[in-house]
Image 1 (tube, rainbow, N blue to C red):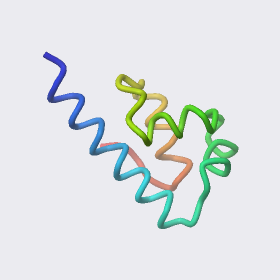
Image 2 (image 1 turned 60 degrees about the vertical axis):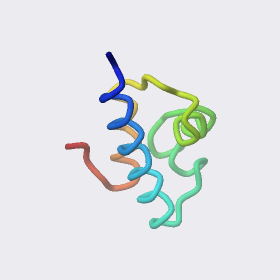
Image 3 (image 1 turned 45 degrees about the vertical axis):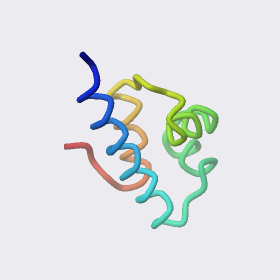
Length: 69
């Protein structure tokens, strides 16, 4: 069952969004810095991407000055 991973991923994305907002960054700025599409980031933040790769999450984290644990 993937439920525990899903809830951990949602918590991780929520923390990344919080970090992005605290840094005053737009999705477009994170997209430019990370190399990810703004549409992908938007879908990630709104829960439409239910199984992102660790690479995607890591690229987002680095772009907002964070690291995954």
